[in-house]
Image (cartoon, each protein chain N blue to C red):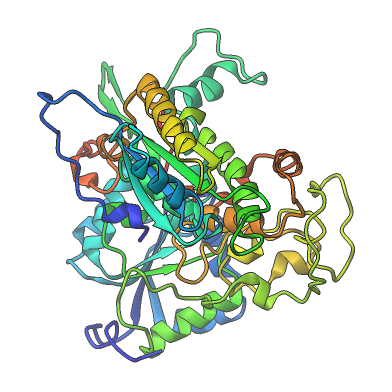
Length: 171
Length: 332
């Protein structure tokens, strides 16, 4: 059973609230999370659409986590790590550097637009870069619209075959 | 293996065995013949009560069996049409133990690669745009057709391939495309002797819990991949890890049990035994592993290497697209 199978059946949300993109950001502890912190302490404003998940190294972000984020309803995913050469673990972000472009290709094969998945290097001093990046990603995800992967799969009958019409006379 | 379940509630006398073929190529049915002379031993202890591939069993015959009549049903193939779903529900009711047999029933298999296309695109390719096709009337199969002699019904095609476990409760999963003969016989022997693990859809039988690399004889030289090669354009060096040579071999993310048949034959592992260890998504596991072994220290070089991989989605998810987190293309 994949993690996506544990998703509760999506409930139609009331439409009185306008849709807002929901973006998951994986930030590495040593640079990018501190960079986001820097944005906060510098009182920079950026949209509240981003949910930050801190990890110890961007090289430790399994592509499965990104896939699962989309499968469970994220509209966009950001991955930020130290600049190449600055990794606290020497070469952790070299793995991010090769995995993320490959994952981006795979996501596009599944029909997820490149605008929805962004990987960028943000150092501890680049609070303004982080704030700008969040603004840019939120805007481009807003442009491509809602993804709603769980609802899409539910409507296709995944995991609830009873709703599908049986064939002819019951055998 | 712990002794439990299947035989304690099994009827006395011969074991009743069922085999059904849904959305798959039929290789799984043939794989049962791979047990060779053991087939004669099997027939001594088991009766075949449902196997449309080898004998004439009507669906009606199965529907008339009492519930739980079949002791073990090996169900191969994914669920693509309403007929397959209906039979999956029927054999679930009639079987004490239902085994998702082979890569298609377990993970969607090769047919699930069509989840990257919409049903419309598949119909267009099969009935209209195929160069070898002559269909001037643009005829497509209909699910319902009224004739003077009565109405005809055909099964409906679903928007995507589902796993057997998406439709009904599954007791065991047995991977392989197809499962190798020695493993099939081992599992059948365990069933006959009643030595089966506790029922749990997560239990995979007929395989080990390691990766194909653990079984592979090829030598690792601890070098990083400098260039990706395609199997039909280069000849691999014998006895050296295929992945290190630049061939995209899925051994690292694939469950063992086959005896590393493909690497032994100078072919890359195709990944038919499904995800290894605790991973649930074989494709991302491979993607992750591959990212760790590329020889790139600059972003340009990384992008160049990534660009050399042909069809990453089709390669990493060759047999497991229906088990992936995303399951299908977002197209309607």
